[in-house]
Amino acid sequence: MLYGGAEFAGTVRSMIRNIRIAVLNVDIPARSLYEARGLCSAHFRHVLQEAAAVLNENTGTSVNISITPYDVRGGHYPEFAKLRSKVEDDPCDNCTIDAILITGGSPGVYEIDQSPWMQTLEKFLKTVFQQYPLVRILGTCFGHQMIAHALMRDTKDPERDVFVEKCPLGMEVGVHTVRLESDFVRFFPLTLGNLPHNELRIQMFHGDRVLAVPKERSSKLTDASMSLPAPWVNVGSTPACPIQGLYYPQRVLSVQGHYELDAFGVRSMCLEFAPSMKWSDSKLAIFLEQVGFDADAPPDNAKAFALTVVCFLAGLENL
Image 1: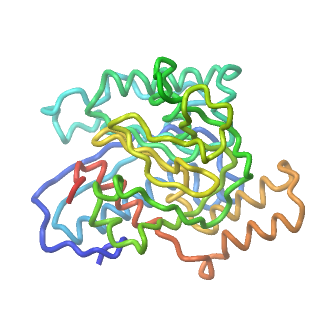
Image 2: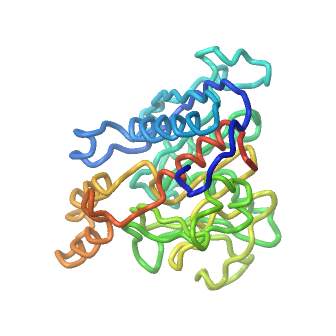
C-alpha cells in the first residue's frame, strides 16, 4: 500500500532514473532544528529519498534522488550550463540538474522591490522556466509564493491579478486540512486519489498567501478568488488560503505546506519565532497543540505528498 492509500498493481514500468535536484536554501532553520537535522536542503533530501525508496519498492522502478544545496542569499546558484537542456543528455552525468527546488523562509515576497537577492531569484526562475523546459521547478512555502510571483504574475492579463500578500485571517500553523482540487488529483490518482474527501492534511507555518482575483477588484478577500490561467492548476485551498499550491503539468509543482517537516520541525520554529512575532503564551500553546508532539501529533499526509513530488520529478503523472 502506498502513502495515499492506493495500491500499485505490479510494475508500472521498467526505468532507471537518477534525478538531481538543486535546492535553493532561502533561510536558516530554527536553531534546534538545524542542530538536529541541518539545512532545509537536508530535510528535503531525507523525505524525497525515503519516498523514492517506497516508489521503487512498490513499482519495480529505480528512481534515485540526489540533492545539491545552494545559498541564494549569498548569490550561490546553479550554473545554467549544468541544467538539463536535451532529452538525450547522459542520464548518468552527475553534472546535469533535472530540477530546481526553492525552500521556505521568513521573507515576504511582497518585499521584493527592496530585496536585491529576491530580484535575482525571480530572474533566475524566469530564465529556467522560459529557456529550460526539461528542468522541473518545485517550491514550498516561500518557494511556492515566489513561483506565483515570478511565473504566474502577468500585468498584461486582462482578467486577473496574481499576487502575494499578508493573510488578513492570520497565520496557519500546525496540521491543517487542504481541500484538494479534483483537477489536480487526477494527475496523481495513485498517490492522492484515495485520500478521504480529497483532503490533504499537512503541517504549515506561514502568514502570507497567494491570491488570484479579478482585475480591478477592490476586495482581495477569498470570495473574490478566480480560476488560474491555463494550464496552471490550483492544488487546493483552505478558508484562509485559497491557493495552497500550483501545478503546471510536467513543469512546476509548489505547495504552501511543509511535507518536509514533522511535528518536531514545526514545533522548533514555533518556539524560536514566538518572541519575535510577539505571540502570547496562550497563542503559542494553541499553535503547539495544532502542531502536536512527535508520536502524539495529529495525523497528516506528508508522506503521500512527498511521494507525489517524486512521481512528478520522475515523469510519472497520470499513473
